[in-house]
Amino acid sequence: MTQRENPFHIRARQDRGEYTDSGWERKDREDRYSDFTFVDWGEEVQMDEEMQLAVNEVKKELREMQELPKAEQNKTFKKICLRWHPDKHPDEKKSLATRVFQWLQRAKAETMEGKAW
Image (spheres, rainbow, N blue to C red):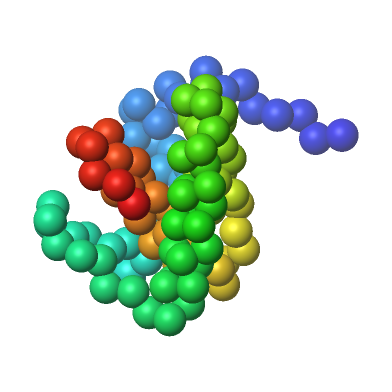
């Protein structure tokens, strides 16, 4: 079994500048924000066919949800958000999930202002 080095000694060497290899390097990506949709307030989000289908499905669920009591509405909305959260999807579907999740957050904000979906 390999004995680990005392982390306090490692930190002391780092502070003195003697130990530069921390094992972690920041990697900047050119497409860092490619999955995000930045839209000013009042503008409509541009949707491709796949997102349009997903949003229509979510809108149907949101309309059905309005008939429920307020506590159930909140619970159902959280479940929908959790289902579309980007971290819950594989990489190939993460872009769609991110856009739908952003749409849901926007719909929630508009609903709180009294607008309906």
